[in-house]
Length: 146
Image (cartoon, rainbow, N blue to C red; front, side):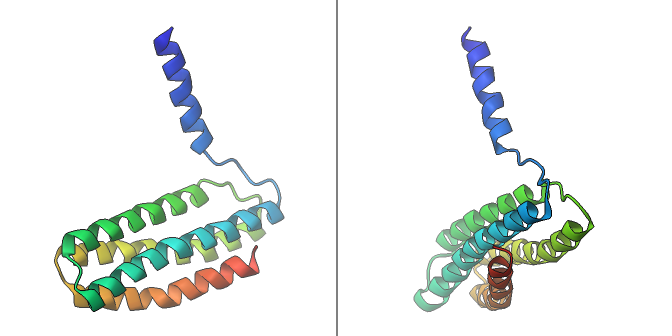
């Protein structure tokens, strides 16, 4: 009995994490806008961490953990969006546009984590500065597709 209820709870938790299809363009567009807004948060966390590291000489382990958590958030956000089935061609174009921004954000944050673990604060700062443009584009996307 205990195993069956545990299995049911685990299955429910897994299924609740799945994202279903968006049946209409407007629903898909709303999910895309929300995704972009969520990614801005992960990007800004990584950028703020880099700023703290450069201006206050934070320790590399602290910085790498903070950036790693932002990276995990970014990958989760990207994965959730990629699991949504676009309802049509128009949605495919929107998906491609957002996916480019999500990819750039996750890849850059990953490179920041690597640089932080190597105590290369100059590279962390350079990468964080390059995220500024991505953050602005994600925010504009979120506003346009809210």
